Length: 125
Image 1 (tube, rainbow, N blue to C red):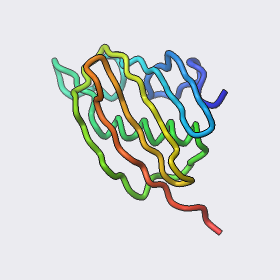
Image 2: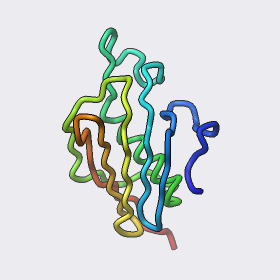
Image 3: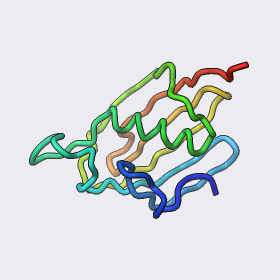
Image 4: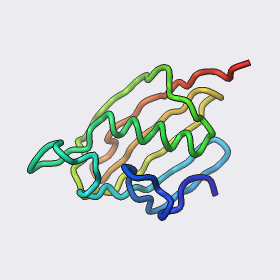
């Protein structure tokens, strides 16, 4: 299975409750716990999952699923639609459209939270 076992998740990433994958698509069910490091100071008394954290997680999990080890050179069609407040369960769907193009969507109890398209650098000669 590609992805992280729950015990192998690096610090700063959410717990993975479930994982499924195919040749060009992967889906993670993530536990957004209030004790995650990303909530420190964002915001005291009312933690909110920052958009940049959602993008970062999509990049990290794209690397794990599809072997994309470099950072994206572009982020397109980035939309934040619903605020994520812990505790929450999010589904992260990753679709590899081309060799260098991955779309991501986070869905929570209230519907789509965010979505975008990551463009990774092409393969070096």
